[in-house]
Length: 105
Image (cartoon, rainbow, N blue to C red; front, top):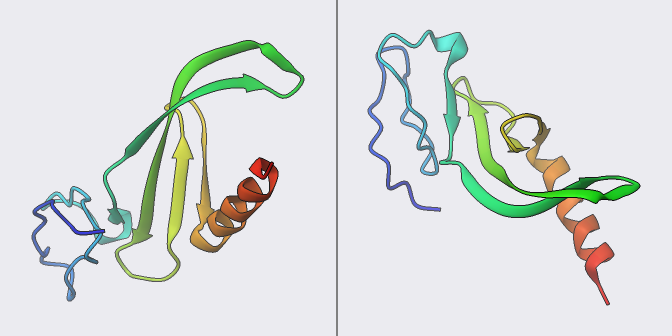
């Protein structure tokens, strides 16, 4: 993923953003609150609840990659504006593989 966003290095950061970061890093952002993030990628979905697909509705899930500016583990956000998950990148890979198995013919 190529960074098409223009983010500047902040006074509190000794390092540049990762190449995938499109996060808004306001100058007054406290370092403990700052997060690198990709742009949200909206995915149109039809969502229902388990056991009650008749109440399904059109919606979307936003997906984004996150990492605290201090480094460490990368996370993935998946949500619809009302609720969502923030899971590790490793966990997202397991979900991806499980979805691939479930969707096999």
